Image 1: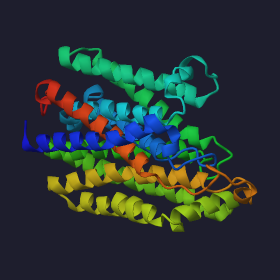
Image 2: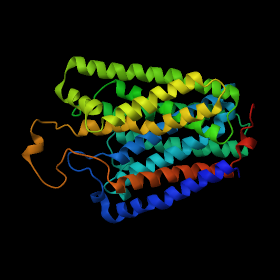
Image 3: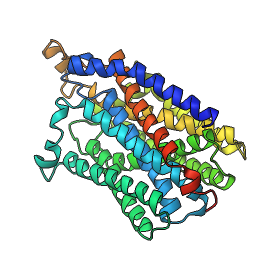
Image 4: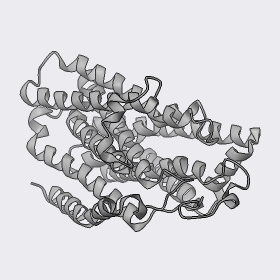
Length: 373
C-alpha cells in the first residue's frame, strides 16, 4: 500500500468517525436536527445525493468509453472509473435514503408508486444500474476478456443517461418552482455529471499515480470542452430568465447571484469551479499535479452548483406574503445546513470513499485493467 493510499484511508476513517455523530443525531432526532421545514423541505442531503449520482454518471462514462467502446486513451482509467461509479452511486443513494421521512418505507417507491412518477421510475433505474455495475465488476475480475462486457457497458451508458436526465427532469417538471422549471435542467444535470465524474477520475488517477500522458491529454481537453458547454447552458438559463422577468424566477436568481450566500456562486461555483480549473487545464501541459488540482477542484465544487439549484428555488415564497401569513416551527424560508447536516454529509462521503478504497485494494487494477491494454 502506497503512502498516498494510507493517507486516503486515514482521512476516510477519520471522516467516518467524526461523521457518525451526525448519523446518531439523525437516528435519534429524526429531521428535527435539520434546518429545513415546511417551506424548505429539501436541503444539504438532497444536494449531496444529486452531486454523488452525477459523479457516478460521469465516471461511468469514462469506464464505458474505455472498456465498452475501446477508446484507447481511457482504457487505462476504466478500472478506477468503474470503482468510482459504484462508490459514488452507493453514497448518493445512502444520502437520499437518510433524507426520507421514513427510510424503512423506501420499498414503496418500487411497489406503490404511479407509472407517471419520475421518482418511481428513477428508483428502478438506480437499482438496475447498481446491479449492472456489480455484474461488470464481477466479469472484469473473473472474465476480463468476456464478449459480454462491451454490450453491458453500452447498456449501462444508456441507463446512466436516462436516470441522469430523469434526475434533472425531477426538478425541471416542477412548475410550482420557477427556478427549476426548464427544459435545460436535465441537460445541465448530464453535462455537470460528466464534468464532476471525469474530474473525480482525473483527480484520483493523479493521486494514485495511475494517469498516463494520453489519458491526461484526453481528459484535459474533454473537461475544457464540457466546462465551456456548461457556461453556455448556464448563460442561456440565466440570460433568458432575466430578460423574461418572471418575478419568482428572477428573485431566486437574485438570491443565487447577490443573496446572503453569494459567495457559493461567485467563489466556489464560478471561481474555484470554473475559472481556476480552466486556467489549470489549459496551461498544465504535461504537469500532472496541475491536472490533479483541477480535477479535485471540479469534483469538490460540483456540490456548489447543486446547492445553487436546490436551495434558492425553495426560499422564495410561491405566494407573496406567505412568510407573514403563518408563523411557527418549520414555517420559515431561511435555510442554512446545521452542524448535524454537515456531519451526516461527511459520513456519507466517507462511506463512498471507503467503498472505493476497499474495492481498489481487493480488485487490483493493474491486473484487471493493465495500463496501455
